[in-house]
Image (cartoon, rainbow, N blue to C red):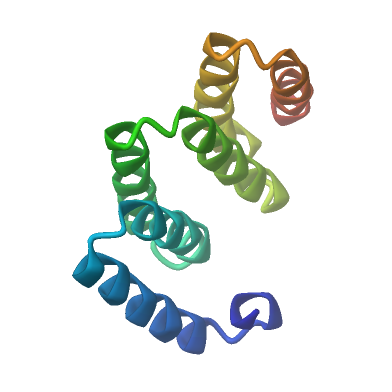
Length: 122
């Protein structure tokens, strides 16, 4: 909730605590969820770190064979970029999401992501 109220520093601290906990107990799904959230939180103030966090989340998703969430993380990251007027940057993330959803035969998500790609292209 903190990140949605603009309390970025408090959100970073909370996510940091959650990340430490998930790592301590070996919960890779929880760790991936926090990393994905952190990637969107850092999207404006530190884009390279934001992408690094996203790639860590995606690597964990692949390690636990959570391909749906890998696609969702990519799509959500692309949407976050689009909301900031960065459609060109969003395209590779949206295209990766579309390709993952297609490999899972999730046609409704492929179609939705295709609409996002078209919007990102302007």
